[in-house]
Image (tube, rainbow, N blue to C red; front, side, top):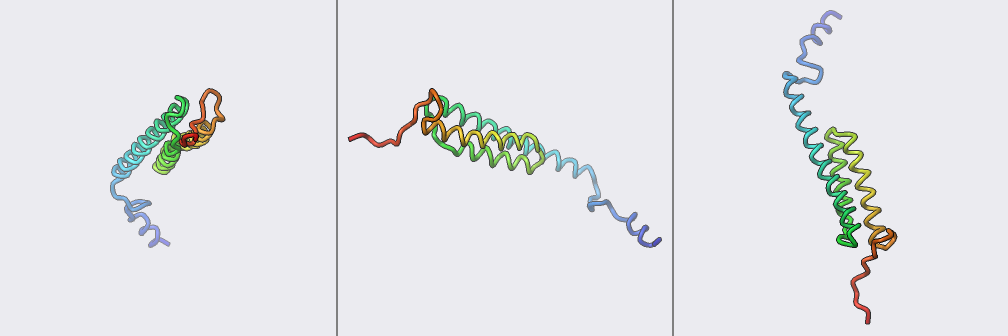
Amino acid sequence: MELKSEERSGQVGRDGRENPGEAKGKDQAKRIGGLISCVLGLLLGLGGIVGALLGGVTEDVSTGALAIVLGVLGYSLGTRRLGATTVVLGTLVLFFVVAASTGLVPGVAPSGHGYSAQ
């Protein structure tokens, strides 16, 4: 028993790190990266909604999909609430852009299929 307790107290740390300051810096860098990706995702999501409201400026759902991907990245890097918010906004953007492009949103005309009538 005595031998095992001496072995455990002789270990460097619980997770094997010698310098706990390095771990703190890495965690901060991950959170900053998560924050940046979430903010970019939120801006893309809001841009997709504004583009759809301006009368069919964009029918591209990639803004919503990219917002979801950036939100998941931010969530995995440590910004949990902001990442979840970004994913929810990206999902709303997907539905809103598709609804606006088909004419289901009042005040926004459907864009049409692009073929000329003959």
